[in-house]
Length: 163
Image (tube, rainbow, N blue to C red):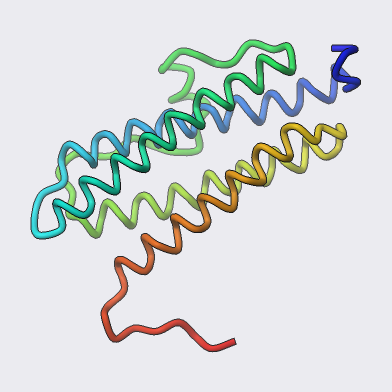
């Protein structure tokens, strides 16, 4: 750990939060696969493709979060049973409407963003700029995806408030 110049005890706190985030992203990834496979109806083509883009992104983030944990010289959680125990997310049914899928994903985004912000705060207490930088980019990306999904579920004549 000396080569990173981080306090081992404080780093363990960061890793604990990263492992929760890793569990969140694993469940999120699987949920996106579920929705990708099971979407039906008039929005099939749009959402089938969008869910694939989203699960490809989630898969990449799973790997990067695990590698960040390894960089910090700890073992990432790597069993599905542990993901289910640690995650802030829950599994979803397969037979859902397109709007229900989007509602669930937006709810999950809120939970994932909350976990990322919590992890950033813990990493900040340790001066862990590497973790802060990684998650800062993730937060911005997930916020943008959330905006797009929210816009998808709006009615055509809905508008956003003027500031």
